[in-house]
Image (cartoon, rainbow, N blue to C red; front, side):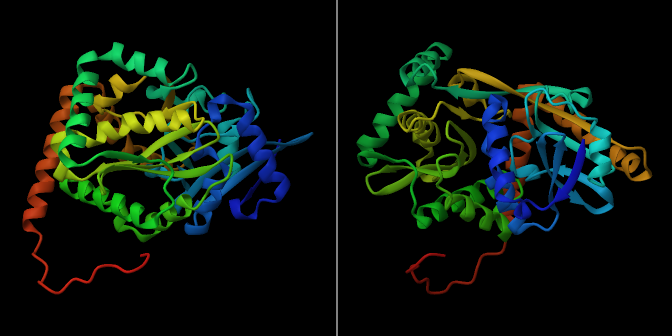
Length: 375
């Protein structure tokens, strides 16, 4: 096996075509974060993005996209932004992971959302987690029957709030695959507010992440695209989501809502309407990603599996990295395993967010002009 390392943007047309062929040939790779379009977009914005191209005697056998940071520390492409990573290769391809790291000039590679069971990385999996999905392969009605079976009380409550929202705030309208950049700005504003309110780091404070979202929003091919959805009450947007899709799978990424309408549970109302719209558009699945949100348990009709683990080559850098990362990873696993701890941690973060907001100085009062064009 021969390995060459290039930037995704330097891949030729034949290699781009081969990437897409390999992805479509293996159902476990049906995730937009594994698509070549995402890798190319990341390469446009970040200097540390690379892809290892694996050649066997008959041609290209696989692609391994990754990030190479200082001291040879390797991270999955997109890191904390993504919910899936892995080797895009022919089903069953097995390659020595340490030899792969050597070719990539990496001393260590940590993963936490690896496609579970890939032969190259399976020996290094420390934990495997379920990622709940909404599965529409049997049709939207079959999925809704499963949701009703999961929790009839929850579904009844959300449907009641849905009717109440429309009755009190204006007729509901759902927009699927909006191309309006101003609608995207509304959603990102809600999400930034949520990050700050809950004590988390505002991802959109980093301009390159906003630029990445804009690039993804502009993608509209048959195999890959950004999907912006918005729920309106009358003419007022109340809840939305931006995610990525392949031809058949939509991945949850950035859901948010206007807290002024929180009493109506607009986020869950939106998710139900998004599911129906996605199924109508021909998608077969919405991947909600692993994580401790309780609403995922009753919206799910199936699961995928992702793995956490670590590959390293003997070096002082790898040893130091292990000492810094292992306690954090173990603590996170313990919290995710126990819903009571997850809720407690969430309350602590929200409390921190409230304190941080109260300490933020008030902006100077000034006249505010309404925006007249795209940001």
